Structure formats: structure tokens, C-alpha cells
Image: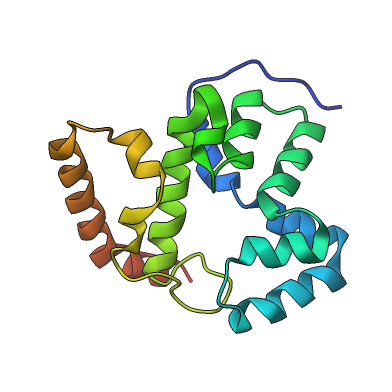
Amino acid sequence: MMIATTEPEDDLDYVAGLVHDVGWIVSGSLFPEHHQEILRLIPQSKGSARYIETDTLGCDHAHLGSLYLRTQELSPSLILAVQNHHTPAGAGARNRLAAAIQIADHFTNSIGLGHLGEGPTMLNTGWQDVSGWGLLFPEGTEMNRNFAVKVLERTAENLPGMVDCLV
């Protein structure tokens, strides 16, 4: 029996980061042939994996993941953040959470972690160009943004080694 949750604030950002790509798992489980086709097409494509997903399945993994989380009766804030982790401005009151997920997602891809097997997808600093930066660091907060960039750059040096130790 699933129990609907209220809006828990504790660890919402952590959980959202963990489950933001659950749509990939749902896709592979429910539509294995389509999922394999998407994975086959991604390395050949110059565009976004999301467009290949939409062309193949009719929706991307963010939408599919949000549908799954909704069936599990999870927090609306969590669902909204997952659904909009590629387009954080669409997450309304949870746009900052979606922006943080977007940045983390692009950051890990840029250093070769969390990608779909095609290797790093952005230049090492490409994660700084995603739309979420403007939501987290609006005009006038350059000092905070520069601090965040420095922290992430240090993380980029250490994270791959830490992950290698886990495997």
C-alpha cells in the first residue's frame, strides 16, 4: 500500500537528485526495444538525447519519470523537480531545486560520470552555461556564483576517483 506524503522539506533536494533520471529506468523496463533504440541512436546524434527519446517514445525521460513518481504518490515538489530538471524555469515554486539538479546533471556528465555511455557530453565548463545558473545566481550574485564554480571545480578533481573506489 502506498501512502501519500506531505511536502517534506528534509532531504527533498537529496532525494530529487537521486531519482531525477528514474524515467530512464522506467523506459528500459516498460519499453525495452524502444529504450535500446534510443541508446543506439544517442552516440550518432548531434542533438539532445531528449529529442531522440521524444521521437521514439513520444516523451522524454523527465516526463516519464514524473508520471512514475506520481503513480507512487510521492511529493508534488519532487515530481515537479524531476519533470523539469532539464527546463527548471518550468518548475514554478521548485525552480531552484530543478536548477540545482540540472547543474549537477550536466556537471557529472561533463566529467564523465552519469552519462549514457557516450562519454562526456560537454566541455569541462559547459555545465556553467545551462539555464539553471540564472535561477540560482541571478544578476548581482557573481560572488556566490564564482564560489559555487570553484567548489564544483574542486569536486571535479576528486569525484571520479571517489566513484572509482566504489566500483
